[in-house]
Image (cartoon, rainbow over all chains, first blue to last red; front, side, top):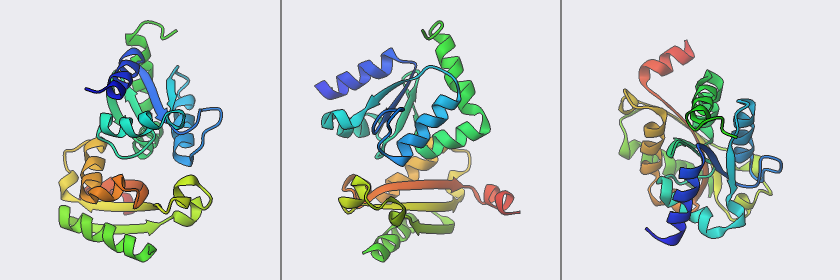
Length: 111
Length: 96
C-alpha cells in the first residue's frame, strides 16, 4: 500500500463518520458534495470531512481506495457507504441518521 | 459530442446488464462554469431498470453501473453520473 493509501486508511479508521468532499461543509465547491454534507448535517451527528481539493493525491487516491470513481464518498466505521445518490436516498429513508448516530455511539460519545 | 456520450452510456449499459428500461439525460448545462464542465467532462443522469439489481444493496447496484462505464468515468468523459438503479418490481411500484 503506498503512502497516500496509508494516509487515507488512517483517516478512515480514526473517524467513525468521514466524508471525502470537494470543498468544506461551510463552503462546498461542488453541488454533489454540498448535498451530501447537508444530508449529514441534517442527521445532527458529528462527522469528519476531508477537502480533496486541498491535495491532488488524495483526490485521485480516494477513488482507488474505495474503488469508486466519484466524489463525494462517505465512510462509516471504515466502510464505504456510497456517493451522493446513495447518501441522499438513505437520508430520505431515515437510514442515514440511524447509521451515523450508531457509528458515533460505537466509538463513545463521538466527542 | 453530447449525443455521442449519451449513446455511449446507453450502449455500455446495455452491453453489460440485462436492461429492461433505460433513461439517460445530459445535465451538463446545469453545471456550466463548474470546473468539471470546463474540463469537458459531462454530467449525466441515468435511470436503469434491471433484474441484475435484485437482491443487491444500492452500493453494489451503483458499482455495476460504474463498472459498465469502464474507463469513461476515470478519463472524465463522464465527470458525474447520477444513478437510479431499480429492479423491474421496484420500477413498477415507483411508477404506479
